[in-house]
Image (cartoon, rainbow, N blue to C red):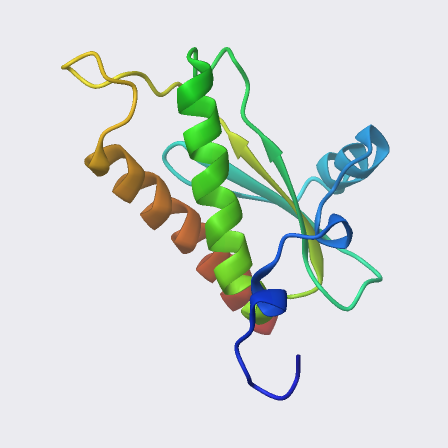
Length: 134
């Protein structure tokens, strides 16, 4: 991976890049370090791995429709895959903290919503990198 060549392996989301156990999530929440955005909160803590790991908490209470929850998770995973090389070796939990709902037309997902989610998640990742380098 250090050769700088972009391959499919560099952008995967393998098991070692995920938080899976409830205890892992609890450790991140117990660290009580969080960056907040409009809709999302990014909880973080240093880990002993050479790379960042990601966990997602998208509660049904905040996003009622499964298609909406899944769309948010897809956006978050994609951004993590694309940006993980620049992220510090932290365990991260991205949590949807504010309710999001369907658009005025009744469709759960619109391009403006996706763009807003992506922008906020990127902003939180950037804030984390800045905080780590300071």
